[in-house]
Length: 396
Image (cartoon, rainbow, N blue to C red; front, side, top):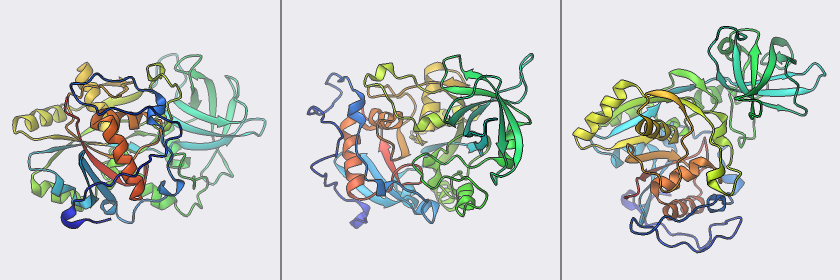
């Protein structure tokens, strides 16, 4: 949808298709107490046809919803982003690189299994070499010590072995600790598959997958530099070299952080009481050059524009702890006090997800619902290969 002068007022549908009824909400303002939110508050029904199964033909040709103004939602094409920013603003990207983290194999019994490697662990004295932490999909979980036969990319030839060491990070952990028979990065590069999200139905399983070449390029940002992610920082997928040149010409600066995205980013919260949710852990790095870029941005009166929720998590983790790198379990829900980020470019997220809660915290709970109502009515494309929106931080 295109509106005259690239702006239009949002016409909000009368219903939001909630799975469960919610009590009527009062308008939130800084003078009102913050209500207690539950999981049901972040639940909605999305028409399956709005889940993007393929990327748009051009990265910057996707749609962009300008949702900064609670009273006016405006439709754009993503390449119009420079028109919505100002000279002196600072874009912060996540420069992680998605690895071919999905691997297939079988147990000694012949039962098939799938591994999704979450992270590669550093070698340690008195510990097996080539250790990885992974999700495992299998009908019956093998016991520690089991040797797994892993296949090459064709799914027909034995390529390497994996030995199950136990659970991670402890005996009750949801993930599995394994030792591979060779360097994990080399094995993933040679035999792994791109870890497409679970809601993309055409999962890659063989080398003959006709979409494999497109996914290898388009489920990776043009900034990808540091291997380690099991999922893409999807908001940055909309940027291409031509768009970056226009932003630079405008005087918009850019900097990078690194957060290796885990598959837990797709896991819905399962506890109605949000305080009982155990957040997944992700490793981040905040370069000194980016710290300086933020300070310079503040000095010149610019705004810090986080590209994606992973950039938000990195910037706000650094602001909370003062640590330039480490593991973060930061869980951002309404009421969170954002210290760094002024604007956010992000995609449309899963119901009941921590990412949807982050958006509600950043832009306002009611405004988040208004945005999603509008996006569904206007048939925006959702999730990783979908469209994007530009948000402004809720004033405290």
